[in-house]
Length: 351
Image (tube, rainbow, N blue to C red):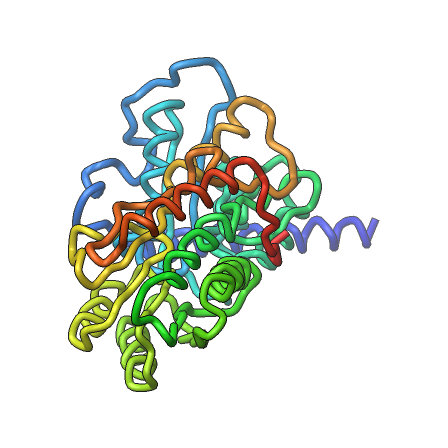
């Protein structure tokens, strides 16, 4: 009896501590200052009704950086809005989440009745694994990561390397490119898959090109991103390749100022500068986020790795820059076709 009483008391105290944190956590979610800021952050305000019968969804997403970052996080929020419009889902988010707060905030949302919890980024893997074991009836998603548990935690990824392999061939066949600098925040498994497949292809078409990697240690620090690019340019790089959303404009400005070239693997920036940009990949985060939520709504969710790629319409490419030749365009189309047909063996570090 004493052991049981102590266990119940401990659980009550733990629950009280988590609920006490609720106000603080909601305050950390910043209101966007541009579209889609007019959409309700929480579905308590949602007016759309589900278009078909399914699970009633309450979805919360945690983000490491600012929601309205111009890329990675804002597109995830757009995926939540798609679920709100299609299924009448209740949606909310907390951005700028630090590593120390990840597990705590996941527990808070689970205890508030949210049944789909998304950690948007590789860094949420450990916290999701820990908290998913405590709430078996809640569905957890490690978006852009590799954490899954076979039951209620899934890793939702892109088919990393599909897009960058094709982009690498274009880089390798571009005249005047002898040294390439690749910039990201961390060398995790997903970034490694993208970068290594880019290298594999670039070296296939130009075995003399030199390729170096730089990691800033922070996806959200614009100054670090720009400083990394400036250092690479000073070191003789002719082409900068990056997957970073925050700081992408500052990076492009630095490359333009040096008269060199740039590629972005995540977002099509071509309208900003078709002379400086060679080509951009597109990872449709909104579409992939919605596809993962649909698995829950329609009762197919499994605790496995979901990889959405070119064949799913979740990955693609923007328009070509002014420096790209007709021969390069033809090569890119041929390689994309081979990727679709599964004829190219890609490196995979993420599953």
